[in-house]
Image (cartoon, rainbow, N blue to C red):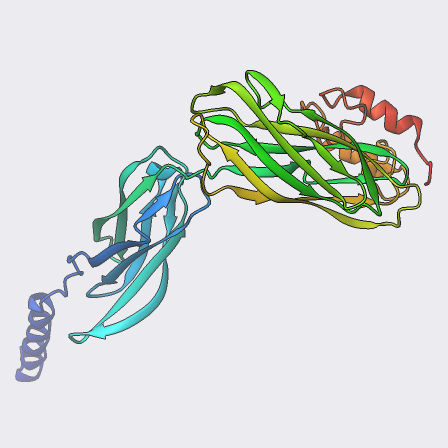
Length: 340
């Protein structure tokens, strides 16, 4: 073999040896760093109405793939957290991941697992601690139903209702304001919240159809121990004046004072007022109340077919008998094509 070919072979062998012995770059094996797990606020109610922001700070040698949080302990599911911001610390870019959630679970302290995974499959799991407490129900005096539509000259009923929210119940003193130029109150009866013998206080109820006010004072004996049930305190029957103009009119509780089982005032009572709408009252077979009976009314009944209902019955329970069935469809069909 001549010198030229010997040189070529030696050079090839040298290149091959360099390729063989060159070190292989290893994949990242370090898991992400997960720090500062927190919930803000750290305590929420379990009725689904309060929300908390879950937060973690994550950094990795290469790149983050996903960050998830397991919400199944508090009534949710495993969800992906969102990167909402970044900052630099010690030469590293740290990402802040968050997720906002509520809770629908039993009261308790829960550790929600956060799983941060990088693009090489390395992962790190940390927990966010969240305390879930029972929802606080406040004692509430309300007009029920909250809204209803009544035609001019027609009579209707509404309740003044009360929820003691776990307290006992002895009775109360309530004032209601209404528009006397639009409606007149005919009668007032004691409601079903009274578990024992109930009596109107002397001189009550007071109906003033000139000023448009009601004074309702009643008590029961014996008193009801906690937790007393919620219910209607008074049932009022009224009539809309024949010349009442169309519009929305308020039914306002201007005073709501109730006593517990010891006859002491129940604090923190929330008031929820109501309204009546005076106007055209469409028949129930015009289910969507748009002035004609058409395919949309049939579809509304069909969408709720098989459901059970209770008072005040929704319009798709056309015959108001507590269930949505073939009789409701037939009632709509019998008036199909009518206009009002």
